[in-house]
Length: 189
Length: 176
Image (tube, rainbow over all chains, first blue to last red):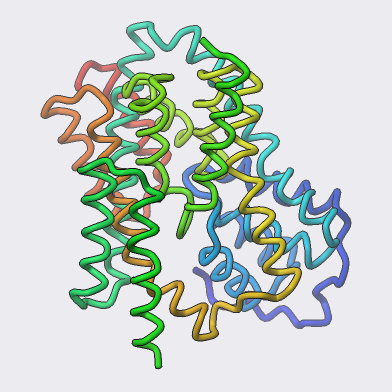
């Protein structure tokens, strides 16, 4: 992440229309090859200057705390702040509408041509890379954890239960999440 | 074949997935795969892996592969059901939290939630990667490509799109 920008607070607008929000988040979504978060920082903090560096980080950490796509949560927070319910809806629509159209076109092409030899060969390579990218993301996140055995145990049980034993996620989360949160709560005292 | 009840079942399952996506949507992929491939038999494991790879290669939030899954299950209505099911519940929750200022990340509750869920999220993301590895037809060459991707992505700041393109080329060249 770049260093905090020196945008003075009074330059940050207090109200931004839903249409402007829609187009800003549309730009973020469409530019976001391989991850939308770097683009959201660039657009919201550096180019449009709607948020200070600190505000962006606060919204992002809340967005990561809540379930759902992190970028959508940030979009809803930004939209709500500048234009209420309509702004939240506009930001979310900006993030999703164009990618939805891309996916429908890809889906159409895949159903039609996905069985051809060329498509199958390309998809085999892309799938191997996609699996690697997901695993690498998990590996990168590992380094952010404190090296203690109890949190690690929760991670290992989650991996084994859902990945190896293929248990339903709902049951695994109902058992693991309350215990993990309660232990973290106690440790924070 | 798709029916109206498939669309409803798809929507409801993605609603459940949405609310369970702790730390982001990456953590629910194993359960999406389990439901779509193993419980409902709507897609083969290969089609699931293909859908994720395509969704990953296109711009947009990283959950959009569910649109592609919905499209294959029930056309446009399936695509809408999957996408809205994945988005609307958490969007409503997020709006409620900011509307009533209900959860600040730096309070004790916020920190306990984040610190408690972080290792579970990581375990689930690694499980997602494992499920994807198992979902496509693999021999040692594709395992090697997966391993090389992990090495490059953890050690460089290369845009992952280049890796996806390299993977597609390696596939077309018959290397994988």
